Image (cartoon, rainbow, N blue to C red; front, side, top):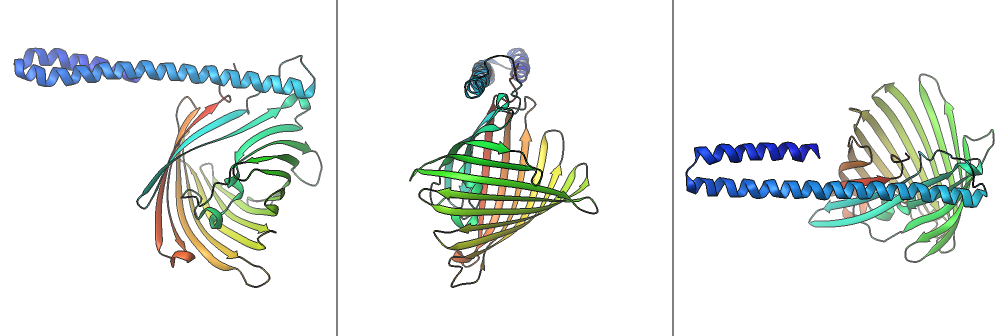
Length: 336
């Protein structure tokens, strides 16, 4: 590690100067802490080198496993195909909300199988991607329930009507365990004055949760090479609860540097707990900023997410939260 080696040189230089400039007492006061820190830095450098090498080994094993899965499912055991987009993302989150501090691990993965003519994909993802504010109160805040992780297999269909059409089946890991099938359709359409419309429709059928529908309609406008504006609209219908929820957000994506990005968002959420008896009411207002920094190695990144929301159930009192995430990617940047 170059950084730690540089610090070691500086510390040893300070040790050398201190030895000649200070008396015996000052030598003990200055030299002992500096020497201890120098040894600690050297030890930490060795440990980090070991962890980085271990990650690379595990990453290469992950790539090898995806290749074996691809060969097994397709029946084609010959030839090499690139797996650059396959990854396993492991994230550790520190969640601060009020006086509560929680640490939460999570992971997600995508495994493309190119030997199947890119028709099959394995997925592992947090089910929170399909849960909105009313279920978890706040996207990056405290959870009231553990919704589990979706593990499944996705099959892609080619058609001219949609940019992407797929069908998935799998299991939701958690409590209770839920089997599911899902269809997903994506439609993109360029509009005037550099606007673009992106529509996405998902239909889920869970063995425990029943039927659920997720509709997304985004309007994007590229301002320049570093700025993009988005007006996002989401509608979620849950048959078992007979509930309807909508979320509307104004978002600004800012590309600061090659490794730094910012997202600003302002959202309003409406909810009807029983669409036959009540009309949708505003349940949540939210302001949020997401800062993400990617390290030069590309497989390590962290994000800082401050947010504040005003919830109807808490009489619209401001609730502040802060999320600190650090993520490690396996596979994607260790193909060769």
